[in-house]
Image 1 (tube, each protein chain N blue to C red):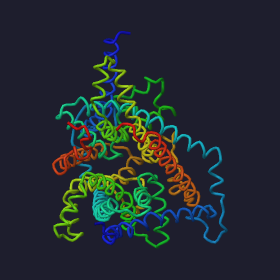
Image 2: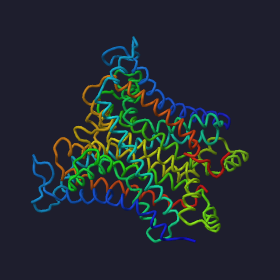
Image 3: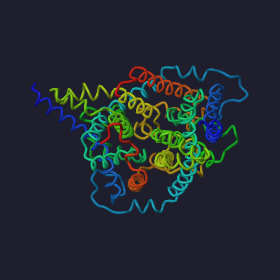
Image 4: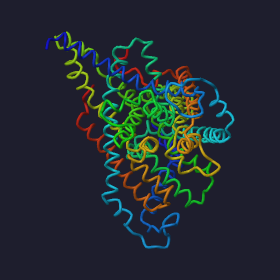
Length: 274
Length: 285
């Protein structure tokens, strides 16, 4: 096979894989978007024949989802605040630490990323029962701190790598106390990393099902758990309307993240960045 | 210059909060898994003698099948995610203009952030029996309402979950490979495909393997995807643990399954990662 033909074939394969990637990511979202405006009262063949806002109205009138949303927000915000506070300090401490076992401690603190959430959730349920904690909200916050912490710590740690130790040392040599040098030099420089970590932590918590399924009680349930229960019980298109609201919220979050931290901060520019 | 006092002080909040949250559930699970199971009772029998029966049950063939399904379907999904994710990451790093790059990265982070349940719902609406792409499974000679059809849906759901993760991780890898090496290969007369596979892919092997390991860890621990689109044909170990909790209240059995699953996941993850790092320490630099 000559070189030109081989290159053309390669290029075609390369571009079709990219197209497939985009199609596979975008088409389902568009289908959900179209279905959310379906006027039919049942799930019929695609595309819908008439359009209406009935599923949005149904969602707005549904107290079951509202209660889930409120719980999700309380749990996600509380867990993110706790995890961001402890995780940021731990990331800074570990970046400076020289003691033996530093790597092991770091691996232990990141371990919830590797252990299946179902295992963490089931363990947390039994643990909370042993402690006599039966309150759903407390249990949920305990579980969500556990899974958001590693995201905050990892992202903050990654952003600390680019900050030269000499800045901190310069502050010390100019007479700042160590804690002041950290608060006024290191923390502001790591701001975008901490912020990105907090956003990742919040999203992880808000979207979690694996842990929450075990820790919810009859009155305290998160939004994803509520949706899951509805999906298994009666599949109607309220969930499509809810999906579109989720998609809009995600777009908003991405724009916000881009404004605050810059999307490039999430992936970095690399050693040979343009 | 290092002040151990301050470093320790900054570690304390994390230790005080995380130590009980990490160790408490672990010990609770280990202890529960050794208790005898008494039917009809929630939680193990506290008065009974400790036993390894709950672990012995897991070795039975019908349980091993769930483990094999989990690992097999996870492998297919993360393999496909790598095959699609690598060209995408390559395109973003090497070819996309700044504006396109921004949109694509925004899209990747967006799909990563979009609720998993919403994505699985969208997939099942698109590829399900009434969806516009319901014929997709026929491309592989599979009927959508057969066990193989259910497996295909689980694979699609898991791929959708891991694709953005894989692509974003690989962007990091590719950004640290010197583009001059590819230019050099091509200016020496190598065809595009050869440059791609023998230079770019070869130098990314450690990154590809780490991305694959992360994707695999995500796939095998998934609960929602098999629960919603596996239709009972495909059940992961996660689903089995959940049903021990919710359907039959066999806490000791669920705890034993959890411990086994945890040991397998953690050793797979760190074992594979260690293997990659020790074999390719300096590659890709």
